Amino acid sequence: MRKKTIDTIPVLSDGIKAVLSAFSKSRSLPASLVKRSRIILLASQGISNQVIASRVGLHYNHVATWRNRFLEALPSLREIEAGAPEKLQEEIRTLLSDRKRPGVPSTFTPEQIMAVIDLACKDPGEFGYEVSQWSLPLLTAEIKKQGIAERISEKSVSRFLKMR
Image (cartoon, rainbow, N blue to C red; front, side, top):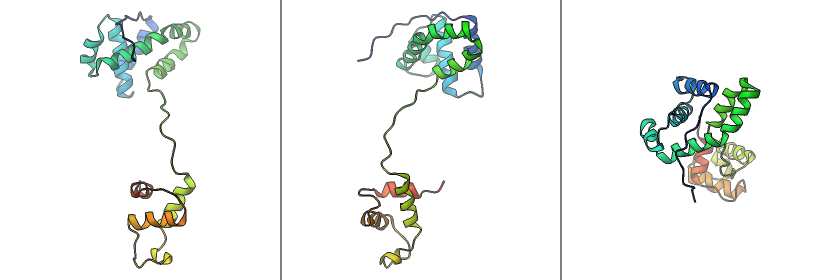
């Protein structure tokens, strides 16, 4: 269950405020970083999550997430600012960036994908088919028949063969 957020006002030092201000005005940084910097600057002015949400175009829960994440990191940011101010900008950039997500592990190995591509480059006649080109259903059936993959969908085969 999500904890109830309180519109706590972060007290920003001049150094932290300068970095956030520069980020919020940037035209070369990712839009998400610019928006999150604006959230923190507006929060430091005592503005509520609901009002900030309407100003930056996000849901107030997202505003609360970034406000809370910044508040949790604020003590360590102050330490960095005192000890190594040259690292402050990169630390704030990291803090306001998306965290890595684990995602689903790959179902197919690179070797299997290469075998699928290799098979698709061969003539179907070599395997006893009376067609001049592979169709997705035929290629998928042959992949299973050769034991390249026990289970594979036509969509996966199509994705592997898609030219970029």
